[in-house]
Image (cartoon, rainbow, N blue to C red; front, top):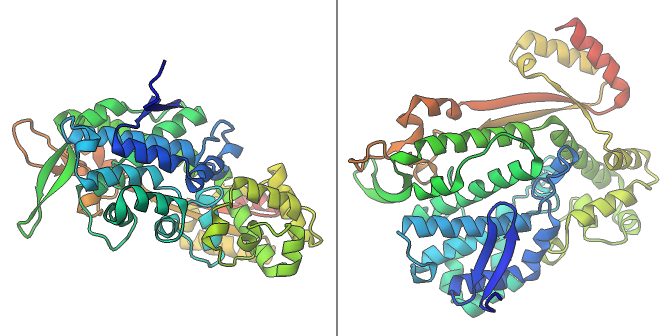
Length: 437
């Protein structure tokens, strides 16, 4: 029989994730998990609309955040030579808690939510909402103040503040080799069913260490780095990141669904009055979202994937034919048709011809532009991956410079797609590409 002092969450990626309630950090983490703000994450899909392509990819932000906390604990234990978490300094403990709550600010359907708002001219970033959850009157803020005090809360806050000074702890939480990525890459691979993009997590963590890095001005800062044995596993990790971007995040159908949600938000904001929207959407918090109005935190806290999906079901009954049709298409997965025009957009003549054709035929379209770098060589000091290439030397190298096999990951992955919105235009655009291929 398990001790009452041990709480367990079963995870398909990490097995049994234990919370030892005699450890102050684990006890705090367990209590945070019970708050309504964290429980909301059970109803936010980690990958937004990706389950419309990979039906198994329907895990939540809740499971990812718990996994991220688990990985963060393992990283801290490794870089501090096996020292128990409760014995580490305050900032180390705050790192683990920040890892647990790093996604509480995500809106419904995760990145699809904030992208749909930004495409309609309204700024929204989940990192900013994280800060609001820690500043405003929430269960999480009250719990942190009660159990660990304002100094601890300020440390947690600093991890999400763009103005805060970066250090080795930021590298554990948010860098190009962090607890967040180490969890979601393996989790997404497993849940999606793709048979590529794996890496040996335990080995990679076992190669972590802290070393001093000298800056051009002669000052030194401690950074998280890899020992020489971590090179090959780091290569697998970067290959896994590439697979995640190419096969999951940038899939054309996923991108099309995101765009359709953004278009629906734009249509409702322009064509429905507040009274009509509230009548149609039963005065749900999603009304504010679809009208592109500011969402108070207490309303945002109950806005989930279920809220948005239910609203789309209701909008499918709208008297506005454009809103009703687009809603019905989303519900039936009749998505926009995507065409890769990356090469066309690099040729001025072909690009001009395509623009003229789209204009002449009055085709409804949008361009979806992806510009992703698997490893940013231009990243700042506390965001890079460093490695020692010699067992007998403390010298650190940016991993891109350490071996030529890593160099390809610093290249930009760029893709431009033409999204055709109206099914009646598909034949015309396909004939155009056949003639001009």
